[in-house]
Length: 397
Image 1: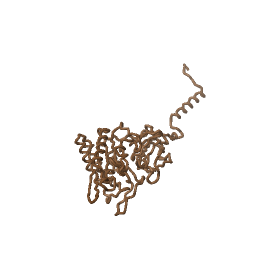
Image 2: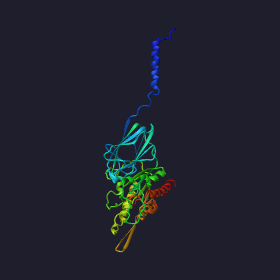
Image 3: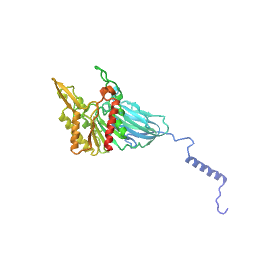
Image 4: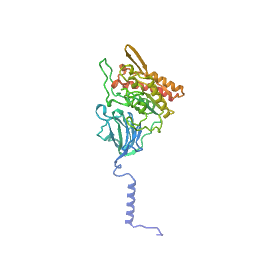
């Protein structure tokens, strides 16, 4: 046959059989998609994204401010979370999270100190999914330590972050204290319902709503009852300027300021300095002490964030006016006016990126109040509309 190789019939059958096996191996599996398995994504993994202040621990990542958000993406059909929580439990000591899958409206998750594993989603259509876990409660409820996500499938990188960052600094109003409940005042001796952690919801607060309207990423540094130079209980430790230096309040872990600076910083502080005390001359805020502390804080913010717009505001539980009557004599002060003076002082010194925004005082008869007379969700919406317009004018002059 002139040098053409020949093959016996049995050999040809074996060659064709081998070729068919190879083709089957390269094509779709006759038994369907590859089975999924549980995969752990530790808290330190680059696929886990954090928005807000946190610090790294031996086992995970610790945080306590409201609004701290943890995000990731995965290919699969189920998801669960490992978390260590320090909340004491009960109506005032249970930490709550909002859990949103693929941008859907969030579901509420209450966590416990004795429960380390939480199912977040199951029975999803197999495919690409994104999870967003947002802490609703603040530091006074207890810290949380995120340990890991566990996905039934494969991990993916989280969504891109917004390039616009807005930081909100303040007290209980910024923490969205009591926003999940609304009541309308009645004549005395009626009193508003008191704090429950379940009704603290930053998504209903002016900060979150403002950031959402701007398409911005929000970060919160806030603590109920704390002030600029004195707290609501008239103590002078754990003040807002000191809290600002920390990753997590009530710890000694410093916040790392080497990351990207916020584009806008909203300082809503002074309410507790105003309200502290029960109505004597000594209870009136001290102008020199307040201005010294606030002035120092503004200088620190500017040193840390040279290009940020710093917005100084107050409200909406008070505009800063307080008067007392002692022995028939009425004395009064106005913390809001002090803030205006301090802003003008900095602007005259050449800092034209510090601004004064005046918030309207809440109207409980129209909008109701939240827990402990705090702004209702309706009041927060009004606050957000006004603040959003103010910031838009700064960013788009």
